[in-house]
Length: 150
Image 1 (cartoon, rainbow, N blue to C red):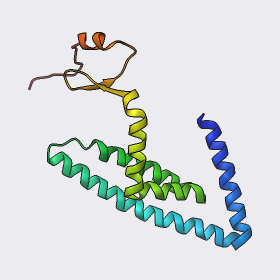
Image 2 (image 1 turned 135 degrees about the horizontal axis):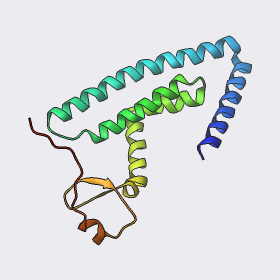
Image 3 (image 1 turned 120 degrees about the horizontal axis):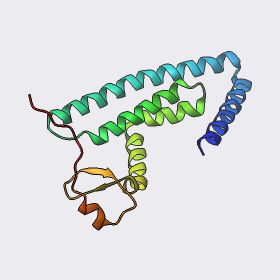
Image 4 (image 1 turned 90 degrees about the horizontal axis):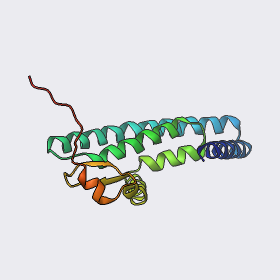
């Protein structure tokens, strides 16, 4: 599923770059790609530091920065898209750097996938769901971890 997506995106990027190059010229097209990359890298740096500050603040308050960590992942993917030459990937990358659209993307992904991936057991720990009945899951009270004394 992912390989055809890469092929289609690459072909679309080439088509858009050639079309823009025919309209405004090759040098202007390359210059425009470089300018969008510079703008994107500036936004990437700003948003990355902003998320880092939010994570530190939540951690200091004793809260789990789960949403902020997801935002960090979206910012990382957006940075990769901005480094990829092309206008379509730059546009998608810039959308990932805008806080409103980033939150929208994360909420949509969580709505569609959170129930499939995670469930909560009686102890309050999150674990991957298995194809077992709720009664079988509740019987397993084993918590894996490490313990040592100083």
